[in-house]
Image (cartoon, rainbow over all chains, first blue to last red; front, side, top):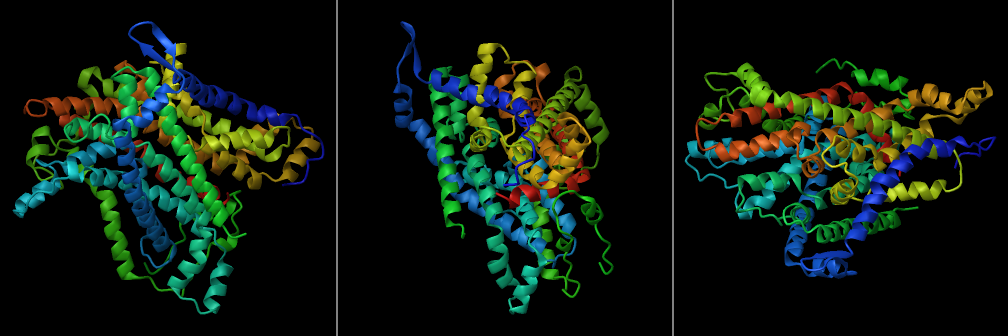
Length: 293
Length: 312
């Protein structure tokens, strides 16, 4: 902590007040309101009535919700390690000083982050297309069977590819930025001790990347559990592969806006948010505990 | 590259208020460049740029050519300008409307969010007051609440108070950036020296004047980082507008494009439908502003991200 400022200042709360007021109104109030709504149920007879935790009990037993959660969890287990490993490798390659055109490569890999996920999904949707997508065209020319990206068995992989394409660069930039702040004397000391490039990467760079890796992993947990845009847009192209409960979030959306089950949708959103917060928190705690003092 | 010209960022970085030691510019001139690694990374780069190249080429084609010609090369009759004109004149110029809406939502949200986060970050970093730690931890916990899990509750609340289907429904939720606050607090801690604050107070400057004339300038790279990333988040937002807006005149570009794409999908079988070319050209146009913004402002957001990613 920096030393106490000479005079007590009353301006501090004034600087944080605007943010905190909006935070209360736009963050805590919606959550509170959703929690309140989730305790009621709208019945055909007798209107809305208080049902306690009934909606949550229904949600826990709901096979469609479970299917969505399991699918998102599968997605997370496969996509996030691949994405972060690629981001790490690219960041290390960029930082190694061995690359020509490093600047062009760095920015080029990052560019997809600036592309709206709607556009990314539309693009990949056309590229995947079995009729006039370039992959199908190419395999047609070579008289090979066309890759069926948009079928049931390939879909999760095709979605993972879109998300990876969008976010590898973002994670790479965070890791790369962290690598650039490692002081040069550490490398000199390691080199004096006879460490090679791989040894330096493993023993100097990776430990220094720990906080940045924690950050990227945390954002990836949060990001992949809210998977919505990509499946929602691909659903219009292949409605028989992606149904309205394909991911947990898509299901919550369908509940609220298609089947108008507002109270149940509130319970499901609240539950999903809670699960993610608990997972992220548990993850942060373990990451911090393992950190050497 | 035999003569290495120093990248522009190194010039700026020395004038950068961020706590980056000058020894950070480590060049190891003795080290040789690796051709195999460069080739491998260029292959990687190709993967990331290929869809964008496709988009660029596709935006020069008629719907007919999109279906009939090879996707990764130009057709015999490129018609980029025709496509752009058609995109802007379709449905009485609704595309321009969407573009302006996006600009408004993203611009107001980004500037607002960055200023709010900067003021609060500075308040948390440089003032001690009762409840300081508790309030900050509360906000920090909110980083973990996913935006989409919050969106449906926000919709329910906004429906109650009549904010649904107005521009506010998009702008207000984007103003609060917990991660932006976190980043600005970390940034302000180092970038704003206590001695400068003390000196300004000695000179009799008021707290607000100190903030607007001295602190904001020192926080510039962090501010630009929050600004850009909120800009991207709002520009690219799809879920929130999807649930909040019914009126297609209020749509941002993402929602507009997806509604066109749905039309192209439905009428796509008939050769008379031109929608496909419009979707593709519209997508291409919507990508350009953000890519340009990132390229122009790269030195700012890269140093801003460095601070956020290193300290925890």
